[in-house]
Image 1 (cartoon, rainbow, N blue to C red):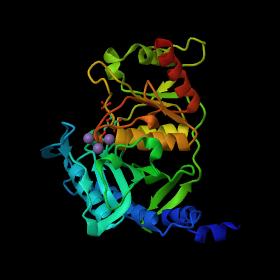
Image 2: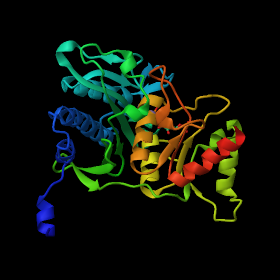
Image 3: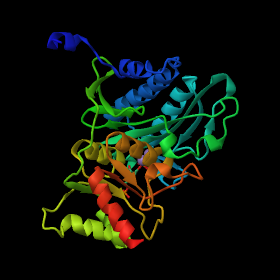
Length: 336
Ligand code: AHG
Ligand code: MN
Ligand code: MN
Ligand code: MN
């Protein structure tokens, strides 16, 4: 239809999700209400991040989290905003946050059927220098809403019903999948709405970029070392890949999603399970990559097959373009 019609045909994230949910006759809008509260949290953090220098939100909060990291003020603030928004939605029963040692069990009067695992502020080390940061979340359904248990959370990522991230960069972009492909929405500050801007994102089958913290090279295992070496000195005489590493998973994954390539946080001698947390970093990003036609691998198995035993468990992860991940799977298979 005409560009005029398109201009007034605002496809907001709410409308887009309502359209998707209308495929499920039994859905009563609970998921849409939950998502709206996640979106509210993202809008708040986006606003805080853009004003952080002015609102004295830079620097340390003076606490250390369960990860052993010094919490930044914005880590704590964004965590509080998301917990409050999710509880007040009345659609959640368990919350797991990077910044809370224990899972939050929502009081019965406010309980709903969804479990949300989230990293309220990803890339905290980049806050003070203004480099892109983000929020990552994954959503499970609870088995028995009247009796939510931790076991409901310790489920493989393939059982998630939705996953997404919001990147606070030059613009505020929310990328979401509810299991039917991946779509991207950009915040229009004049409307305060996330508008559909990236329809049905598909990651290129192969990319020209590899993304890894080369500073850990001394501690890598053989397959990772061989793979990275091949990125720089291709054995087949093809041109070397470019290295891009931002240090915020959300930004590195978003670039990988749009441009193709591979993002890696491998195990190393110091940390056998790598650094990234399974529930609220590895699973949501792996879910999105598979929905976009890519894949995610732990060095041993498909990332979404991990069955976590603890809510802050970590795993190595290699994710991105399908063919690039195939290459590193071959390196690990050859070393097995
Ligand atoms: P967070 O800020 O939520 O703790 O996550 C930081 C993670 C992730 O964003 C990024 O990919 C990784 O840390 C970078 O780690 P290195 O600085 O060790 O490369
Ligand atoms: Mn952290
Ligand atoms: Mn993180
Ligand atoms: Mn974080």
